[in-house]
Length: 342
Image: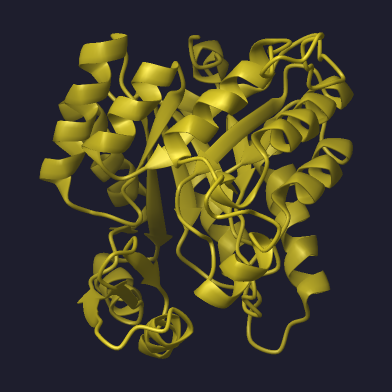
């Protein structure tokens, strides 16, 4: 088991909870992750989602950094299509200046919400001048690397402050195209297996990324821990995902059929299709979950898994603790705490 474990949290609200409760749990999870030896802790970005409290990961990251001491904290991820690459670089350079050597910048390609939220987020853009995602990623990398010449301006533009240690860069995706883009732009790649459990696609993406960089990507997985395999299977059966396909736009995965239908309505689509998806969850006893990760590690050479707990409420913290307890001898080794090589 010579790989690292890290965590991803979306700050979900349990039944009857307020956002304040969910965010308190996110802090408790981050502090537990640090205490238990997890390598990094990431928070996600979702908009107009009453069931999730993390709409601005950069704000939550600052709070988590201030309330932890060692663990790396980052985004999983910022939805770059909505924002100025320059502003994102400024925000994460500031975070990295507040906590040098502890900040991760994860970038996602998905909208993180339904079309109504996307239009609100991008309302200030002139659609004719809005850069494509690959161009935005290149711009962001340039601003993180240093001053950038902009057109015929007499002076270069710098994303200040300049931190003593730059944030680590990760592109999140679930395709060979994303793996190739990350490699070509010099970013780490995270394959989102928790959203796409096609292991043939995972193998292709790993091969494409390794061929270009000489290293494997990270892999994000959803995990569910129970007392026995049968109980784990019962809990997984309750989980649902739906993928909505609208011609001419990016397909999006949501958590309910109602959300999928709402997505199509908000997009103004007269033609669309909804595909029920079986969630890709690594489930079982703590030992069985680790055995499944062992197999992925052995098959693909994965050096780090980003684990999203597939549980609600206080069961999220229990999952994190039980997984760490089952793995404690390995987490205690110094090699498990090493950073991802640049």
